[in-house]
Amino acid sequence: MKISIDSDSATPAFQQLVDQIHFLVNTGEFKPGEKLPSIRQMAEECGLAANTVAKAMRQLEFRGLIRAQDRSGFIVTGGDAGTGRYQARGVSSDKTEVHSAVDGLEQGLFANSFCKVTEDYLTGNPEHCNVIHADGCGTKSILAYLHYRETGDPLVFHGISQDSIVMNLDDLLCVGVNGRILISNTVNRNALNCPGEVVAALIEGSENFLSSLREVGVSIYSGGGETADVGDLTGTVVVDSCAVAVMKKKDVITGDLIKPGLVIVGLSSTGRAVYESTENSGIGSNGLTSARHDMLGPYYAEQYPESYDADVSRELMYCGPFRLEDPLPESEMTVGQAILSPTRTYAPVIYRLLEEHPGLIKGLIHCSGGGQTKCLKFGRDVHFIKDNLFSTPAVFKAVQEASGTDWKEMYKVFNMGHRMEVYCEADRANIVMTVAKSFNIDARIIGRTETSTDGNRLSLRHGDEVLEYRP
Image 1 (cartoon, rainbow, N blue to C red):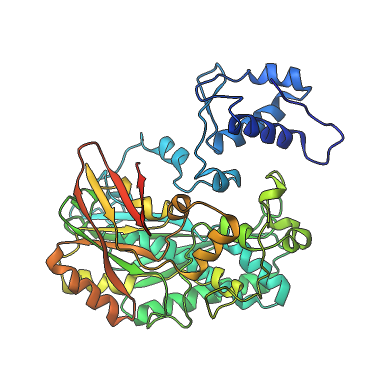
Image 2: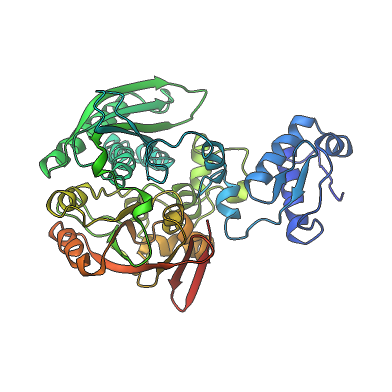
């Protein structure tokens, strides 16, 4: 094995091992299907501790370059150049490893639903069910942290509160939740870097956002929360939420309702809805690890080493051309305004559709983790065709140009212009678009569903190219 570890190098030994094996895979020295030496053998040959080699193997596995094979070690898979950059930062766009762990668990009342739906354990009503969901704003909180440290303005965390709530709320929408929702927030912080004014801003931002939603017909209320000082776990701040609702079983929208013969109406993630205070770039709360590091420059790595994982290759950390205050190309926003733009909720639109047009919605997909490929997890033997997408928003163009990420990966990581999909009969699509536009949200038929003879698949048009995806 052509591996040489330089003990005098500033690059950690495990990272040297990762980089060299990755290079050997890329150049064909290690071929798909080839078995790698065991961890013990590699440790002996390279003069490393076994746990150092194991750490390197985990990162290579996460990149999709190798796969564990029982107890006999690892084999080369060859990886996928379209996902390597995102996964190399320790992030999964489609959470394959999580789904593989939970898919064998009990799936609740409706196996193919967007969120797990259970019996009504809270009240014991046999006609009702419970829906609970936990999520957060992800690494977007680090962007707010950078802005806060640069400007001293804690109010930037108002948007982070919104992000965390919306990532739960809009997932609940996808099973048809249309009544009261109770939400609880969890803030884990490094108290030395994020003092009390940060916590105060997060709490205030949460209460303000919930109040604004109630004003437009969304019955969502605070159930309190928890704040923990965990400096050993995070250098900055992590903001998560958990939402719970009780609904009637007959009102549940399941993924099985997504069948061939429907149209897909996309609700734009950009612009300014009537219930938003500023223009929205469309960024949402997915893919922010890539957006942060591919857009922002080395200055932030030098000034704020607590804001990134030192175990990841430095060439992937803050390798972009911008500062937060720089203008975003093809936009009136700055880079900071664009990538910190609070995640839009579509709850007012969906609540009205459910209330005024029962039965219209056959399926709802929140294009969060997995971006435009999220739909592949729902329905059976469905060919999703998306050939009339919105124009690519400026923020995603800038990410792609700064990073050189191929477009196939971009559509898998980001929402790329619409973050909620409504599946309905073609003759009812105008109703969806009219309701959306009453809230000043652009909407259009972005595609349709047809029959597939070999499982779910997605064909997505980007310019003159058609990108193909499988689950």
